Length: 63
View 1 (cartoon, helix red, strand yellow):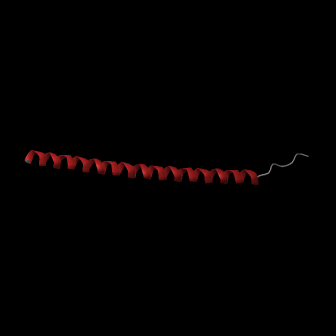
View 2: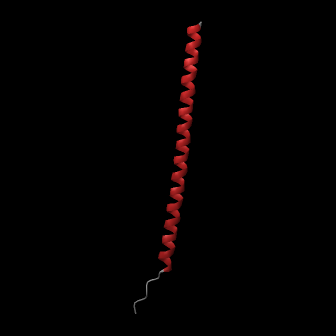
View 3: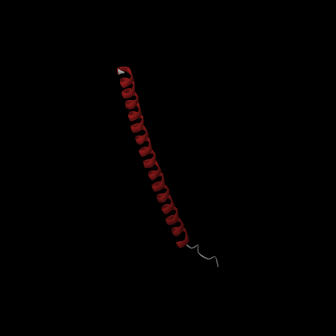
């Protein structure tokens, strides 16, 4: 009976460790996704600003 109880506690400890590792990996993935989304937004804003500047500078007409 004691061996079964110890085995159960050991298994429970392994599952808890795996759960915390999985939770940390999920949190890291979420942070990475959020960073990627922010970077994409910043890039899109930079491209839009660059495009606006390009349209403001009209080439001089050749006469």
